[in-house]
Length: 517
Image (cartoon, rainbow, N blue to C red; front, side, top):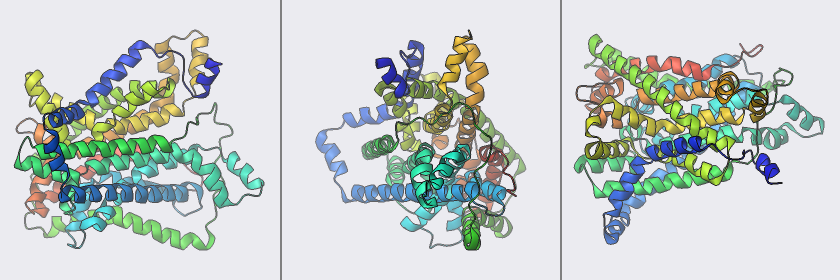
């Protein structure tokens, strides 16, 4: 009976000790910044912490941060799921083109998108401006996994529901949407974590949140008590977000053996709604792609500070690409054992280990960087001001991107196939190479692409941890745009977008749709 209950919940008996130890080590590594914040806050007296928290300014920052996270997650979920359904399940013309355009905003960093909007109009600021920019920047994080999940659904389930007399709306709500839940919630979680730690875009839009306040505090005092207390509140916000994510996820398993008859669902005919839907897609693409690209080209042409230092741009691009590739490989490698433990050996311990790896993503890059600076100076002085320490920061910050991607693939990988391989005499390494890796390869590729995109556009941790003399495209762009030299900043932003296109293309690849073009 116990074995049956374990199988029902998707767990196996006895997780290998080595797997548990490696996963615990990864989680401990990811919790270094949290430990720094907690230990520093513990050195303060209770009254001092209370005085720092109970201030009108903290209430304003909490309201702004929570409001932006809720609004951004909801707006991104609506846009992401809506676009995915239109592209994958309707007869809208040019579905392949719209799919690429819906994924392409990932190639444009949020602070470049903010630069595009704010440099054209001073009215794009405050909550509405911030919500607009972050939604246009991050909705692909929901769109891509939802679109992939829609492609993998068995259309027979929907056909049976309709044959029983249920409407299309009822079928979508009761049959399709529950199966999209892991992809949709995973994407929304990534959006929320990004918004908790977002700095560059919000600083440009003059919308204060906990992250921008922490940055200001550290600028005024390198080891600020107020900044660490605010960071503690930010961690609590992250924990609340993770608890909501766990609550919304179901315990159902979505893997199936075999793909059945390989066919696509019958497209829904839009009829008189075709033109309004096309107009909505065009407006979305114009806002997420057209505005920032137009702004970049405009400042390249009219900017008085416009220059093309080819040597500096090439050097910064090479550094950005090298760091992105290295950090992507390391981060995804760290995510695999954690995901394997959480999915294949489900338990409270495994869930706790996996959730622990998400916490650092809610902390601003400057907090992660200062934590690693403190650890390196006190315990590993040889690592200070090295690329190794910088890559470690990237791995901690962007581990959740890899976890979400790899977990989605592992959840849809039937464990019975591995059991069959073992039953036929294949060892663990052979099974992993010939059965498991081919099944989860798309998730690994997506995780690498997401981490690469994040690293090549990361700003605050790079500014603090990069060895002296190191310049990336993001730091060079920020240096120019902060001094209102929009023309000088534009070439770096443009090259940043260009080197992000291959990773974005990898994320947007999908099986061809008949008649999609």
